[in-house]
Length: 88
Image 1: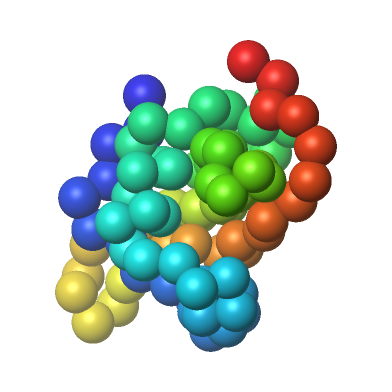
Image 2: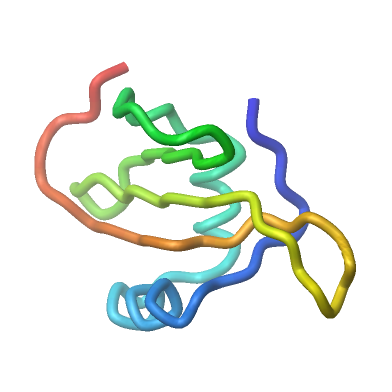
């Protein structure tokens, strides 16, 4: 299970974050309690899904080294809101 206390957004993810009018609480909820999307990703990259306003909210995070903090952090690299059914 993915457990994140802190997350950081890339510039692209930040634009998508504001476009979909999300809150960081919703992003953390999706990451901590969401369902794996089932799509294959590289090692260190995770995609989680949750139902949000009759759509599927997909969030892709990657493990990344932060040079200023000098530690490994989780960065949100993509946020998508798609139509369809969530496969559980």
